[in-house]
Amino acid sequence: MDNQDFATRQIHAGSLERENFRPLVMPIHQSATFYFDSVEQGAALFAGEEDGYFYTRIDNPNQRELATRLAELEGGESGLVFASGMGAISSMFWSLVRSGDHIIANKTLYGCTYELLYEGFPRFNIDVDFVDLSVSGILEKFLRPETRIVYIETPANPNLKISDINYLASTAHTYNPEIKVVVDNTFATPYLQQPLGLGADIVVHSSTKYLNGHGDVVAGAVISDAATIKLIADNGLRYFTGSVLGPFECFLISRGLKTLDLRMEKHCANAREVAEFLEQDKRVKNVNFPGLPSHPAYKLAQKQMKLPGAMISFELAGNKEYCANFVNNCKLCRCAVSLGDAETLIQHPASMTHNSYSPEALADAGIAENLLRISVGLESASDIIADLKQALDHCDN
Ligand SMILES: Cc1ncc(COP(=O)(O)O)c(C=O)c1O
Image 1: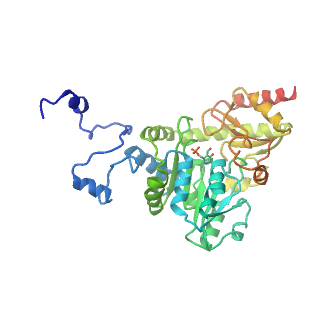
Image 2 (image 1 turned 180 degrees about the vertical axis):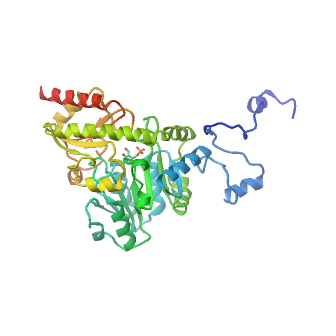
Image 3 (image 1 turned 90 degrees about the horizontal axis):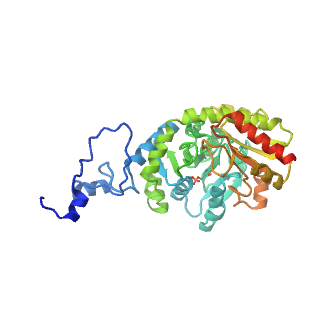
């Protein structure tokens, strides 16, 4: 087709064949749609008779590569990536529950997950029991014929309680093999803990955090067996939420993942030093860190996790104003929500990440008004400790 007009040439001239470059790193496939060789091929792709890509809400090479890598790291058959952790969590729930079902959820959860379960699902006649699932022997008391999902975070945000994944999964599955035990593995990452290997059915992530590790992406993931992932892709992602992760964000997370083990080792080593410093300071009332022998589930954490993670929460020996004064005087540690970044982040759960909890629910979940949460970063541990110490000293004056 020679002699094309300017308007045509500005779109098509010089187009290279798309295949057969050999980049080491997966390029960013920033394309909403993919062309077909023929109408018949398009129909075959839509019908699932041929494998390939046709629309980025359904699948895209960057999404597929990242999801496959995450599934591999978690020891799952298949994975899916989402536009946020909440996109992943809500897509998973909406795909699996229906009116009349019952969910058992841990009492302590990230604030928006709690809100979805506490405010959202009862509107659709889905009953939720909030239980302290870190307590051994408690799940049996809440299981019912309608129970569809048991949902936990371990370590839990923000009180760092540890739940025994193996006990919860075997108890739920003995009662009814169809129950899905879901673990939010955001705090641990697959480098430290692999819930599927301990008997859980589904892992969810806020990939915004350690998986990406650089604080510049909001994203989520779900990993499970192939049939469950297909259900969540066909229902939750495709039309319930449409919570699709863009190709560029997939690229960034794939890049971050390459250093996950190195980052986690340093995060964890730093966190241990920070936790030990906090525990010996009299101005700190108590420290929640699964790597301290004083943690109630110290032994379980050692069994279930490779290292105790890098999230710490602690109560100061003072009221809410004392805590605010302390945080406001931190200089290196930034006052910010989110976690798992290179920067050390400190925040006040009761007024920030968990402000969707009522005062009674906060107390019940062990989130005191003088509780602070710190995501220990990758700076030098001695500089982080020096910053925390000077902020504590400042509160004394
Ligand atoms: C444990 C946990 N799960 C899920 C989420 C939600 O993830 P996102 O903010 O990526 O939607 C968060 C967010 O902080 C979290 O801490």
